[in-house]
Amino acid sequence: MLGNILITRVRDGLLDSKKQATLDEAANGARTAQEAFDSADRSQPDVYDTLVPDLVRQLSRGGGTAGLREVVLLRGPLVTNPRAPLGRSSVGVNATDIPPALRRQVQARGNQQWTYSEIARPSGGRAAVVVVGSPVVLPQQLGTYELYFLFPLDKEADTLALVRNALLLAALGLVILVGGIAWLVTRQVVTPVRMAARIAERLSAGRLEERMRVRGEDDLARLAASFNRMATSLQRQIRQLEDLSRVQRRFVSDVSHELRTPLTTVRMAADVLHEARTDFDPAVERSAEILQAQLDRFEALLADLLEISRYDAGAAVLEAEPTDLRVIARHVIEAMETLADRKGSDLRLVEPGVPCIAEVDSRRIERVLRNLVANAVEHGEGRPIEVRVAADDDAVAIAVRDHGVGLEPEAVGMVFNRFWRGDPARARTTGGTGLGLSIALEDAHLHDGWLQAWGEPGDGCQFRLTVARRLGAALERSPIPLEPLDSSRRVRPLTVGQPYRQIRTPGSVDV
Image 1 (spheres, rainbow, N blue to C red):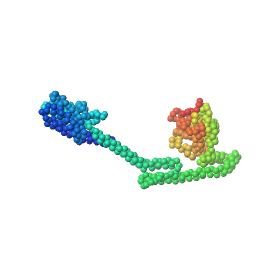
Image 2: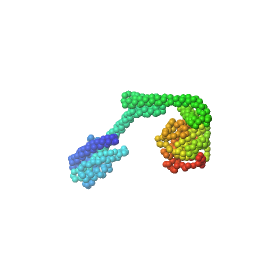
Image 3: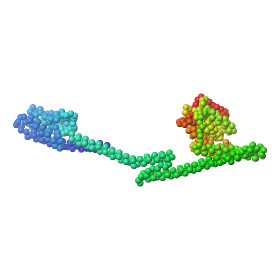
Image 4: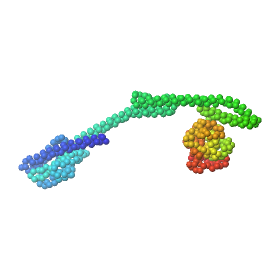
């Protein structure tokens, strides 16, 4: 934009200067011609025939500030005297180079007129010129002639081209300068920011010793120093939390192992008392039964703590083999049927008519499913519970659906936390330890699988376990939707059916 403005201003200045010079020189030339015609020796009959060619040659050679020029002398339209000389022109032009519109203006107004035009070059091509015309009168009533001067604009065009090239070079230099400044700014500003981003990524990946390099005392240096202080503080706090977590895991592992020996001794004594409880009075008999039940809960808690300590220590071992997950689901439902009857819930198994084979550790998958079904029975409010098995080409899934109290939205993200309870005041009848879902989640992760929860207050819950058919394969989707099809936002709730009845579908569920 700026270059165009400069070019336009330079061009207009050159043309205005050229126009003024040409008008002045053309006026001088017209006066010279008029004086020559007026002072000619009229006693000679052919004086104008000789004077006109000489005058045209003289005027074309006389270049002033306007530069070189060509001259054309033409008869006016009213010249009819046979003694009037013919028109003449200099070597480089002819009468056809004079614009007809300019001739009409000179003839109509009778004074100096000008215009821009183009003429053909003898060597080829065309050249821009300024054409200035003026009337001249020949004595002895020979009539009015038209004298035209053609001033080429070659020098102006060369000057304009020189200015344009200079502006282009200046623009190129400016671009290079701006590019250099931008590179410098990028190096001074953007590079440290990118370095901070890379170091932040390394910190998030666990490389807590990474720090930014501090150079100088500018704002970026202060930013780097602040970033390093923040990283040091985070590293210290994370190390403290890791040490605390390590101590806690060690404590849980040590306590769990240390309690097994006295628990075994207490269990032996409790078994003796429990077997002889009929010989005691009713109060002691009841105490023996309570002791036996609480020892069962204590042993379950110890077993869960030991299992958690194995996961924390990375000592959990997976013994995977191809297994039909429908068989595991049947075993779990058969084992939990008595508990479901006591709670008044109906257990239903929905499975496809084809095997759902996956490479899994059957003991761990059965433990996961047992935990899910036990939770559904505990919190199902005596309503039906559905266990669904489905498979596709890549994965096998088991979903446990209940219609009990459900979960609040914020509880869905906490349900797998250790010792978390949705309602601490709720009466517990199944003797849970608060670690079942945590262990189930670890078992799912050990299989590189998913264990997910969905819940709505008053509409129950659904827990979904998804594992790949081939151990270690990446999961992309599950054969069962996480939100059940019978949720209140979709259709009516599930109708009550017969206890533990198998519903076979034609094939695997695909969503």
